[in-house]
Every structure is written in C-alpha cells, then in structure tokens.
Amino acid sequence: MPKDIPVNRGDETRNQLLEAGLQLFSIQGYESVSTRQLTKESGANIAAINYHFGGKEGLYRAVLEQLVIDTEPYFGPGLKKIQESILAAAEDRQKLVPAITGLTNNLFRLFLQDDFMRWRAPLVMREYANPSENFDILYKGRIEPLHRTITAIAAAVLQKPIDDEECVIRAHAIIGQIVVFGIARVVLWKRLEWDGYTPERVSMIADIATQSVLNSIGLGASEGSPNEGN
Image (cartoon, rainbow, N blue to C red; front, side):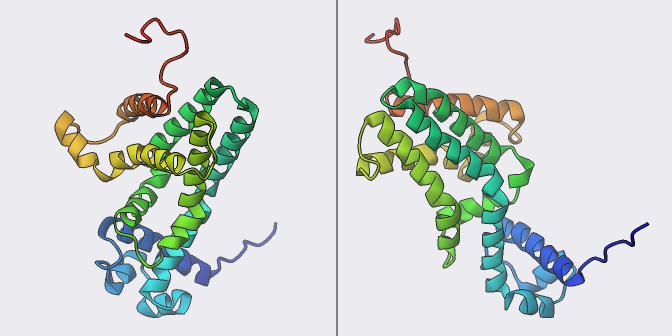
C-alpha cells in the first residue's frame, strides 16, 4: 500500500491563519482585530503571521484575495450564463426575465442563507460600508464583474449603451436591494420579530425583491396584463 502523503505543516498553518482572519475580520473589522486574537483563534504564533503574510495587514489582504478565489465557482459560471442570455435575447426584453430572476434569487440565497458565505458575506458588507485600503482586491476581483453584468442587463432591457450612466445607476440600485438585507438585516428582524433568516424567509424575500427589481426596469408585468393601465 502507498504511504500516506505527509501534510505540509507550513500550508496548514497558513490556511489556519486565513480561516481565523476571515472569521475575526468579518465579525470585528480589520482595525479591531489584534494579532493576539489571530494567534489564539488559529493556534499559530505571531512569528507565523509575519512569516506567511508579513504582518496583520498582509494577512487581511490575503484573506480578501482568497475570498475572490473561493467565490469564483459561485459567481463566474452564473455571470457567464447571464452574458449568454443577453446575447440570446437580442431585442426581446421578456426573454431576460428568467435570467434576471435566476440571478437575483441566487444572490439572495448566497448572501443570506448559504453556509459557505457565513463569514465571507459579512466581510464583503464591511468593505462596502467602510472600504479599506485593500478594497480594490474585492472590487476588481468580485464586485466590478457582478456590477458590469447587471449593468449589461439593464442596458439590454432599456436598449441603451452599456456605459450609459442610467444603466450603471440602475444596476447599483438592484445590487443595493440585495445588500440592504445583509447590512440592515437587524432592522427587518426586529420589524417582523424574526430570530434570523431561514430558507423559507429568504425565499420570500427573494421573490418579493425580484419582483421589485423587474418593476424597476419595466419588466414587472407581462404585456397585455389585465391590470395594465389600472
């Protein structure tokens, strides 16, 4: 039988620091996390932080870079599918409804429900609200591609250039409808006396917000609807 492949202790320590950093930075923010907390949470020592990352700032930067890498399977294929849907729809706006519905539903479930995003989503929200010097890592790697894809949807629906300011603003408004349920979730929970998000609650939120998104770009009601014009 083949011998067991030895574990690279250096890689294991590095991964433990990345995981500890992800959780602590998500909960407390970069400035509030100490190296002592990072070593305690990871089981590593301060020397390991300096060796692998050059210090706390380097670790934070590496956490953001790893977040972009880890979330690629969740975003990359979906964004590519959206681009393909835009090309296939040509000038038929209604053909874009399934693509928009699928995208918004997936984003709501990913940000509010998926366990994989348990620490990653709050960290992204922190960077939205209070961007650090390393914000460009998230912006270039994850936020801009999503923002451009949604802008392309708005442009296709409104039949305007993809760099039109109105389309960019509409895309930002669409993303904002998703982000607010993460950043301001405590408000909704208090208003509805919820103890958190459940799959059923996230599904309801996604359905309602998706309809709002469709309404915002003029796709909320099919042509010839009996309620149209009332």
